[in-house]
Structure formats: structure tokens, C-alpha cells
Image 1: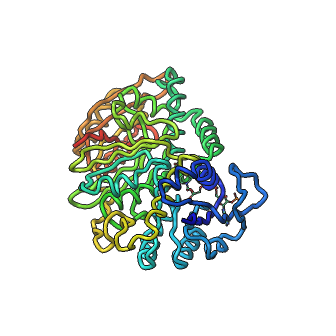
Image 2 (image 1 turned 30 degrees about the horizontal axis):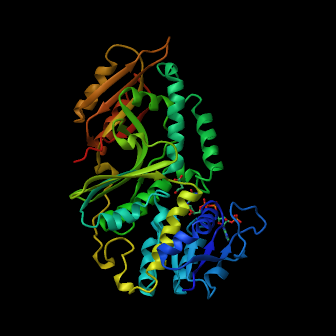
Image 3 (image 1 turned 90 degrees about the vertical axis):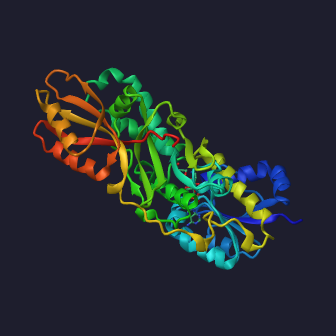
Length: 454
Ligand code: NDP
Ligand code: HSE
């Protein structure tokens, strides 16, 4: 049988990796797909740029619409990024009756509902395994492997760049542990942060705009997708609560460790009676949890199904070939089902399009978690009593308190871990504590999840 012809949009980190993997493993891939899979056309901005892959045999162009409109091309692989031009190209490909593979989580999270509806009407597939957690086949696992389950919750480290930065900060915090007792929170952090981010960019992990990684936008895109396939709800990126890691200091990393926790940038989606929690924020996790020990660019997603219990998916969350692994797996999947009846394909969002649920996404104020609080207090009698009285009056019970002795005339650093409480109550208590004249500056608040199996 003739090989299937693929048109590639983008020859950067993931595009280059995809060319390399397809060429290197061509024989294995053809044995799996039932026919060869070859890239016949590719679009880039700059035809003279040095590439990480060999482009011989590929017709190159700077016009991505030429690829999308080429009659030979059966599958379009979108690896340009962004959600403007990429949306136009993907919709044009679908209108031309071509199947689409993409690694673009921003595109799927923001425009997936429209794209899937159009694809359904045209009877074509849009595959997006690489859009979540790089090389980990977590979409396939949740969509197909866990199809028997009522998924209760999931929690994931789903941004490789952010995890790489937090891991490097942890190493630095361990090195500077002796300074943590009286040091200025955040001192020297800016330099560390910028250096590590620059390294993640050089390694091809970061988004074109790295604030997407650092501020949690990229993780929110991915969490939006995961929640939709886990709970059978439409994609609702705008409703996802998003907090980044740029305020986390090495001192917080160190104090968390003293208390037996690791700080990870977590995406959490949970189904409750009232609706769905959808939130990305830095989170303290007990260090005994496997997911707390996922370091560097590695990602992990913990999914709790009612039948299977907790399951954990782990692997490289970014980078050329790990991401290409997911892109090429999608190409194999699409190739295998090219001739299948479109009505009998796996639905894009795991559930049949007319069976999606209208469960609301809950506002953050209604969500319950435990908390880590760090505050700077003037070292005088009665200060801690004032703080604990406000917490008690707000119905917040304390799990642990750690007070760091002030160095010289400086203020004492107080760390408090609380039990679970509604976010709205915590907002009120933080406001009241910050208003005390014995408390200096803003309180650092990091949410805490124990990720128990039940
Ligand atoms: P890169 O910036 O490395 O590559 C983007 C490619 O798109 C480049 O080859 C660029 O051309 C090309 N391009 C951009 N605009 C145009 C245009 N107007 N016309 C033609 N070509 C264009 O990005 P990545 O490979 O890192 O990311 C691609 C996608 O994959 C993004 O959606 C990203 O979020 C996603 N992703 C990335 C991962 C990673 O580890 N990097 C992991 C998982 C998903 P040129 O090279 O000539 O400038
Ligand atoms: N910038 C993303 C990350 C790429 O660091 O996780 C993978 O989606």
C-alpha cells in the first residue's frame, strides 16, 4: 500500500523531532500502522535556518496554507504554536477533508470545542496526544484505558519548564539552608530563576512566550484538556484558576521541606457534587508521595478512577523526541483508522459529543484545601496569639506552626500549616492578619494537597 502523506507545519523543536523519529523508526512505524507514514511537505518561516533534522525528500515552503491545501497531503501535523494562525490552518485542513495531528494545547484548550465540532461534521480526526504532558500517553490512558471508570479527580505536574525551575530552586535551597532561618525571602531568587528559565529555553522546553510556563497558563491549557476528557465536559479554559510560580522563594521551598513537603506546580481537577474544580497553582505535597519526587523536565499525572483507584503516569513532559513520540503515535492511530467508519471512532473528548455534561466549574472561593502560610512578624509578645485568634475566629484549625528565630533586629518568620478550609474563609483571615500592625507585608499563601487515595 502507498505510504500515507503527511504535511508538517513547523520544523522547530517538535517538528524537527517528528521528522527524526519518523525517519529513524520508519520500519517499525509501518509495521504498526499497516503502511508507511512519510512527510511529503513542510512549512517553516525561514527556509535557510539550520534544522535539527534532515529535510531531504520533503517539499519545503514558507506558505503553510500551501501545505494545508495540497491535494497529496492526507494528514496535517500542526507544530507552529499559538492560537491565531494555527486555528485558521487547522480549520482549513478540516474543511479540506484532512485529518489533523497537533501538539498545540493553547489551540485545543481555547478553540477545541469549535475544532472538534467542525471535524465531526467533516468526518475527520483531530489527534492531540502531545498537547498534554509531552511524551506521556496520558490522553489515551484517560480517554480509552480508564473508560470503565467514573474519574473522581486528577492532579498533575504538567509543565516541564516549571518543574525544571522548581527542582533547580530546591537544589539551591538545600545549598542555602543555613541562610534560610534569617535570610530575606526571595534574596538572590531572581537570578536563579532567570538563569534556570534561560536554560529551559535553550533546551527547547519553554513556550515561545515563557510566561505561559512560569505563570501557569500552559498548565491551565493542559488541565482544561485533561478535565474535559476525564469528566466529559466541554473545554472551558477561561474558567480555570491559574497561579504561577514566580512568587515562590527558595526559602518557601526549604521550609516546606523542613515540614516534610515538596512544592510542585500542580494542576488539579476534581469532580464534586456542586461542580468541577479546575485549578493550577503551586502546591505543597507530602514528600512520601511518588508525584512529589518527580523532578526536572519530567511530568506526572495522578488519576483517581472509582474502579481502578489511583493511577500514575510519568515521563518526559517536553523536548524534541519525547514530544515527537506522542505526535508520531497519533499519526499511527490516524493512519490505522483512515478507512474506519467515522461514526465508530473514539470521540475527541472521550465522551460522545451529544453526551457532554454541563457541570459548572466552581469559583476558587468555594474550593477547599489546606494551606501553608508564611508571615513576617515583629518579635514581641502576643503576636502569635493575635494570628491564631483570627484563624480560630475564621473557623481555620492549625496543623503545625514553625517559628524561625529572628537574626539581630529582624522580624521573625512564622510558618503555619492549616487543615482544609474554604478559600473564601482563608481570604478573609489573611486580610485580617495582614491588617495587624505587628505583621509586615503580605502573607505568602501556598495551597496544600495530601493527594490521599480516597
Ligand atoms: P518552535 O518555536 O521550536 O517551532 C515552531 C516552528 O513553527 C518553527 O519551525 C517555525 O519556523 C514555524 N513557524 C512559526 N510561524 C510560522 C509561519 N507563520 N509559517 C510557517 N512556519 C511557521 O516550537 P516548538 O516546536 O517548541 O512547539 C511547537 C508546538 O508544540 C507548540 O504548540 C508548543 O506548545 C507545542 N509543544 C512543544 C513542546 C516542546 O517541548 N517544545 C512539547 C509539547 C508541545 P522557523 O523555524 O523557520 O522559525
Ligand atoms: N513548555 C511546555 C513545558 C512544553 O515546559 O511543559 C510541553 O508542553
